Image (tube, rainbow, N blue to C red):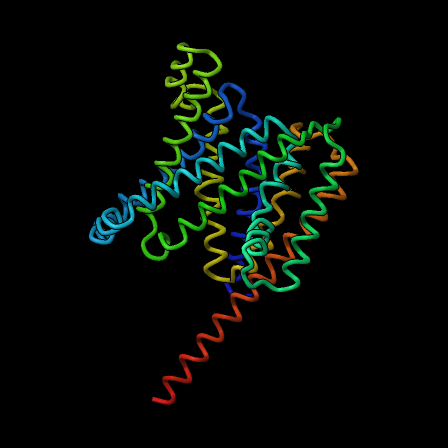
Length: 326
């Protein structure tokens, strides 16, 4: 095996461990509300990308200025969707079990194909089957309602809303990361952190009245509290190194391989949480329904990626034929 192959395997392992351990790290932070947790994580991630911008500014100054001039509004909108995703995720971790939160949060492929089905967009039969399988798994999980595992239907629905939010984030971000992405990533994460802070502020004011404004002093509380180490882990290790590892895998393999890796998150995330004491032993409904959801998501993702690759190959072949004919 070549050196590149070993690096891909290493990056896959690092990325999988990082994303799977994120839920446990969020649960370990107890001194602030869920939305401030999200603010800490994204804020630290933004600092990492700001460092990348400074490091590459001299070589890409013109490109960065052009991006800010033409795409600033899109970056901010993308950041708001990303912030919404993290706010909903951290809230769901307070309302339901880690296993349920991750299973519903990672169901974006089901939502995309369901949307295409509702809007009568062309989709394959196997994608429809995958959606039916996935949603049947959600029904199985919800049949139990509240249980000793700590899961609740409202918490599950909040996590599902988080899946919607990250879908919109992906849609708005797709074209921003094609070339020299560091400036786009910095602005996205900066606006996302600001959004999470204001959500935390509004939440605190609603709970405590005027004294809720004191939450402003928590925005950098990770600097002087031991639990801030979890925030540093989330922002730098998970957000920067973990996601960077997965970008490396995507660059050197294919979206299909990355899709398979990402679908290990609910499994390994639940195991991490159980080992750390944040997840009780999953119930039978969670095991059965969760397995069905993962299978449904996997079917949808695999055949969606294959369809995309087939279209790309057809475009490539047609362009090749045109060049030959001319």
